[in-house]
Every structure is written in C-alpha cells, then in structure tokens.
Length: 181
Image (tube, rainbow, N blue to C red):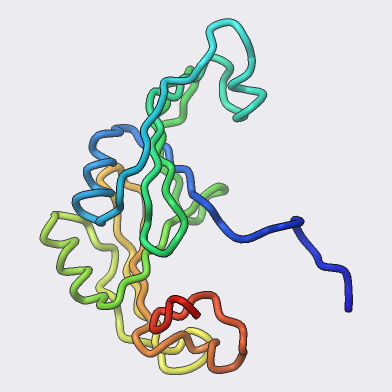
C-alpha cells in the first residue's frame, strides 16, 4: 500500500470565509432567505501599531475586522461572514472567470421550489434551472446561479436521482438519500 498523500489528519472543509460590504444585509439574507443558522459573533480585530493583521491574514496592517460571525449551512461547511474596513480595500466582486473568482453552491431537494422562493424574495436568478442532463458523471444535474444582495455569485444544485458518477464508483461525496452513509 502506498504512502497517503495530502494533509495528515485531513477530514474535510470546515468553513468558507466571505467578506461582505454590509454585514447586517448579508446576515439577514443568509438567515431569513437562505435558512442558515447563526452561531457566535465577535470582533472587532485590528492593530494601530503592529503588523499582525498583515502577518496573520495577509491584509493591510491597518485593516480592521469590524465583525465576524459563523453560520451553519445544513450538511455542508459553515460560512464565516466578515465585515472589514481597510486602506486600499478593493470593493468590486470578482466574476467566476477572475483570478480568485468563486461561488458557493447550495444543494436543494427541489430546485424549482428553491428558485420560486428566491424569486419571491427578489433575488436575481442568472438562469432558469435548465433541464437535467441525461448522460455522464453529471446525469440528472439541475442548477441555477443567483446573485446575493451584494452581488456575490451562488448556485443552487440538485441531483434528484443521485449523481451520475456515483453509478460508476463506490466512492461517495454525499448521498442525499442517505446522509448518514
């Protein structure tokens, strides 16, 4: 048997950090529109006379984390929401095609109901959830990108009949029909 690659003791993704322009707007959206559960809130953090913000977080030495809060995201990783103030802070949202571009995908059981819910809350959907593919590793996939109130891209995804690639392997990322498996 070969040497195990990667981080010793690696278990998975714990959280995803997201910096937002308006903390209360983002908190409200995560909790009241998407259904995340709030956990602890803390801050502010910063230093007027040392470089620990730069040394620890690779941000401007005078950056201040005004607020930071953890939100539980169902069966996936948590979201760690930040509000920063910083000299030279870029205030444009990257597109998926930009370096550092990203999106967060939320798994839902019924994508049509989830899209209707987002529409009812005035959320901009990027596409209509399209028909499911019928072949290959993403057979059965339906997805829909949407924009948060601060224009960050997120995605809904659903595989109502399981993921196509799971029929070709005994490895599973997550079985929505049997979450304990």
